Length: 244
Image 1 (cartoon, rainbow, N blue to C red):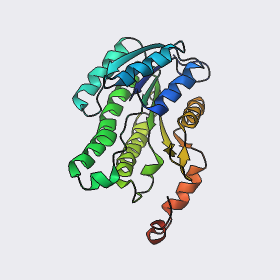
Image 2 (image 1 turned 45 degrees about the horizontal axis):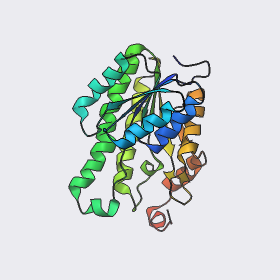
Image 3 (image 1 turned 90 degrees about the horizontal axis):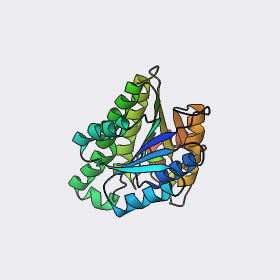
Image 4 (image 1 turned 90 degrees about the vertical axis):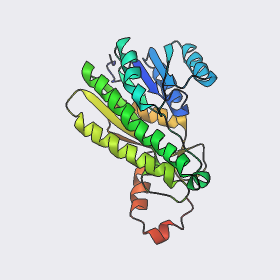
């Protein structure tokens, strides 16, 4: 059950080695979260992530999860929920890809889209069904500012995030009134210098505040909302010249 401030006591992370997800888990553990599931491909990194959260006092377990294996998503999520109620599911997996390489390799480009969009759709629906079955909980979906307008530098990744963002908004509308809260998080670029950047810790802080407020869309940093509103209306001939 969530505490009086709307923060989860139990958390399932889909994409258990995500830096943003782990920063969020650490922040929530410092509040009231006591049970964490990290779902991801088996790896030393996943086990190290789990160990780091156990050191903070959270009962942390790992479960095998592959974004590119949609046929397994529902069973993995059902397995976790069968162990006890989950207050929050954080959909945090995704790949950036290599724009220059992927433009020359359509199969690689398609894999970026399959991971970020198709995988997100399948896992998102499976998580939503599980949350709806228990009649409560939050689904937090990590989108990206990259999905707001296609840039020459990352339009393959950006287009996949645009699809995920639209899907998550629609899912939130579909679940309105069911007791399940869907929150879309649009961070700036992480660990890249420039006007549209942020950090995992800043995103974690924004997620906590969004949960407390039961926000539907969260921008990180908040000023990005105004910046992207302006960029969406910038003529393409000018947009192409911007150093972003």
